[in-house]
Length: 220
Ligand SMILES: Nc1ncnc2c1ncn2[C@@H]1O[C@H](COP(=O)(O)OP(=O)(O)OP(=O)(O)O)[C@@H](O)[C@H]1O
Ligand SMILES: [Mg+2]
Image (spheres, rainbow, N blue to C red):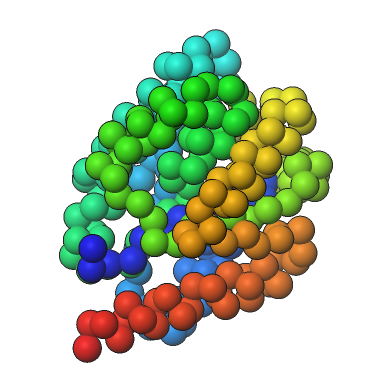
């Protein structure tokens, strides 16, 4: 595939969105042409699926139904947005992708990992990221960050279900991510994101910049 596909992963509150914003700013400053997106979401249909899976009112969502909603969102996102962009040679950076489903629904909720791998493959047509950055942090530290955010923006629509869930769940998800990283060392790079946002950004750029340079120079 001619483009470059980068995904950002990690438990809730690890700093993905913060890092995506900082990465965007730096890439803009350097004149890099790229697009950002997120899962769930990233398309009009996907944003509607996102509303269903993340709403407080969805607390009764059966784990298998939840898994399939994520797969539906992903199938739409890849077909409508990610694959065409990558095929057109663009750089796409996504806040979450297939590893989130493996970590949350698989390792977190205990759904069958083989079923998840098959569903991920089906939904993406095998479109795999060139690079995945795993922002690794203790769940307690991430939760403290989210609590601070909560009080800072009380007017926001409230906690998502994930933030409500037990800490053991988040520990399983974190361990799941680390297992994934060990299984795919060529694709997944771990960054300790317990340090400042600035430090984490520098570590991110050290990994991303060389890949982007090689894509940009391929075009000439
Ligand atoms: N390195 C950091 N040090 C301290 N606070 C941070 C750091 N990075 C992010 N934060 C703060 O922690 C909170 C969570 O960060 P952020 O929203 O980027 O995480 P996230 O991984 O996108 O979470 P979610 O999975 O819930 O979307 C935010 O309030 C953010 O400002
Ligand atoms: Mg986020």
